[in-house]
Length: 142
Image (cartoon, rainbow, N blue to C red; front, side):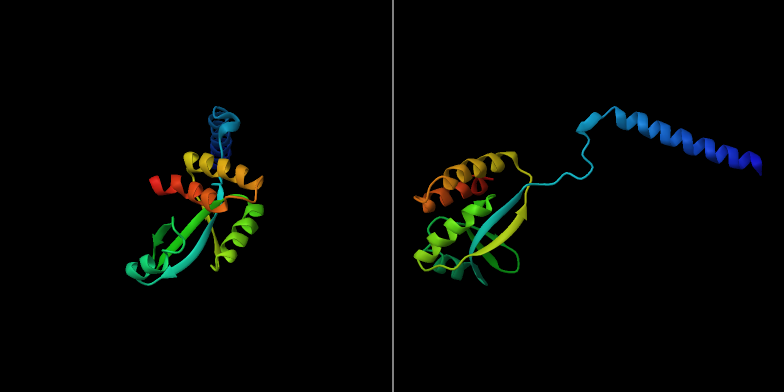
């Protein structure tokens, strides 16, 4: 019986030692829980049919849509919570209510594109519509 206890303890210590050696080889680059960046998509509508989406989205101009149980229409993407109020004010001024949807997406090109747009939008109150078009352009491509 004593023999089995010693073998079990030896196996556990060897396993822990080998795991430590393997993980040390990865250094600090090993991410156990990698978090994707959080994006805020500005939703301006949800429609039951494609045709109703097309008819009702003509007022917003440039948009993207995602289909789940409904057709969801998005006109802007931002990572900056401060920009949301600017976007909301713009859409209220043209009579459109918005909804904020959060998504976590791992895409370095989208990250760079939205970050650049966010920096510009953060420093101005003008041209919000064009900046929104710019923010969804990269998402539209791919």
